[in-house]
Amino acid sequence: MNRNDPNHPWARLTAAARTVTDDRDTAAPYGFATRVSALAFAAERRQASLLERFSLRALGIACLLTIGTVAANYSVVSNLFNNEETSLVTTGTGDDPVAELVDVASS
Amino acid sequence: MPDDDPPFDLAGCLERVRQQDQLAARDLVDHLYPLVIRIVRSHLPRRVPEEDLSQEIFLKMFTRIAQYQGAVPFSHWVSRIAVTTCIDHLRAQKRRPEFRMADLSETEAEVLGNVMTSETDVPVNDAMAAHELVHKLLDQLKPDDQLVIRLLDLEQKTIAEIAAQTGWNQSLIKVRAFRARRKLQKLFQDLQKQERS
Image (cartoon, helix red, strand yellow):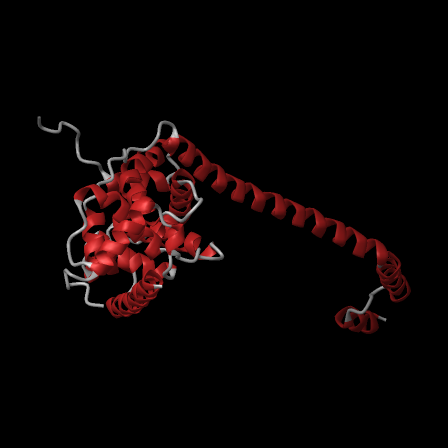
């Protein structure tokens, strides 16, 4: 289809259609700008608060997991400390090789 | 009468919008509304109110405003958002109604019959019917092709202007225009067959 051909039906139809002017007002309706700008900033705030809420929730979950882990392994941790205390009491020097050497030299 | 309004300080307004100034955002919407509403009205999908579509375009604009780097004029950048939003809505419409002579009004059918059978121009008082007819014919095309033909044949924009408004490259626009014209040609042939039968 050659649109430059003025005799083509499409060319004549569009030429007639172009003569119809749109007289409608192009100014924003009353309150439109206020509503849209409020919605735009509200959406941004909502996104920020959502992130905030998720990060706080993640912190809470992390604390609970830490407490749970410590509670579940409490006996192992306490035994470890007890054993260390016992070895310190028996040798008096613990596992420190320098202290043991000094101890042997002095005796 | 001279216009006493000072020119709109777009750069300053954008800066204030980026700093979350709601008043500046309102000024920006007021300033861009005529541009956006013209695009919306010329590409308005069926059953979508123009105010809803304009609102959606402005909300997209505010969401992406941090990405605007100034590589193209701001009005072109907003035009592209408006055009792509309209096309998305047109694509979302599941089915284009089939074009049938029986669905046309009496005047539309008469205008169509006249342009297909004679070589005379459409009378001035039938311009509105021609306008409606053109939009019904364009509805038969794919949304992207519709947009190209509307801009070329109704708004008489150049390929370069369409490229600036849509962000598409010029070769793509030419291909779309060629494809759309071929489809329109076929549509006219079918209508002529219907007319004869």
